[in-house]
Amino acid sequence: MSPDYSDGVGLVAALVATIIGLIFAFGFYILSSWFLMKIFDKAGVQGRWRAWVPVYNFMVFCKLGDLSPWLVLYGIGASILLSWLPVIGQLIGVAAFVVTLLAAWRVGLKLQKEAVWVILYFFLSIVWLGINAFDKSRWNTAVPAAPWAGNAFLGDRTVWAGIPSQVPSGGFPSNPVTQPGYPQAPGAYPPPPAGYQPPAPQGYAPPPAAAAPPVTPPAAPPVEPPAAPAAPPAPSADYQAPTVTPPPAADGPSIDFGGEPKSDDKA
Image (cartoon, rainbow, N blue to C red):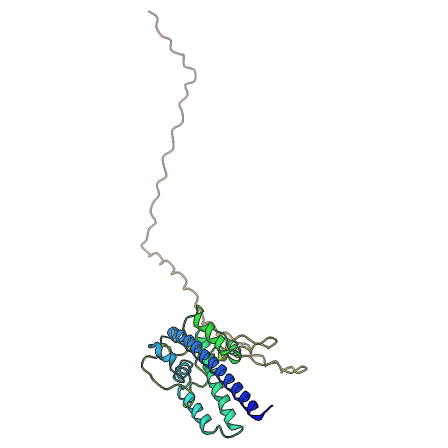
């Protein structure tokens, strides 16, 4: 086999591989842009064209995920400038993917997805985008604040027209993991109640408290006896007792002894 033939076969194989790679890249771009457009519609983003602009669409995606959109540009610029370094260039590419992974976690929470869905994005991001684009989930910003919300470098501080703010109107709700009422892990002891005092060591008995002295009731005030009734005044020397007249004696019945009975004269 001549060297010219071998070089020609290699060029053809490289050209075919390049064409296949471009087809897959173009297909990924079409599908990912379409899915991002649907997700942006759920989030209330104005202008569907934002999902079809390369690089910018993932900047909007990071902004919806509570991350600074400029991190995408930082990663692309650093990878271009430092790509000639054997290890650092690859690490920058991994860091850029981690940024989109964190954004996917936050976007998934706002679409009622659990944190474990990030695993699907890690292995098949296009499938993750398709599920969130066409399921019946609704956009809800009432989720706890991101752990990096207070970081000026990672947190989103930008305001872009047509992209709604991701801060809820009433503020971020409290994180249940950091609240006292969060469920305990299996096998964990519940926290002691307020005012709880640990029991004394075994074998130790605190001395009994001294008995309180008896309380003497206050003395009752003396009670004076009631005064005796006044004696009637003595009669004077000229006093005469009233004369009492006895009642007259009753007359006894009159009995006629020896008298003849009177008879009626007959005509």
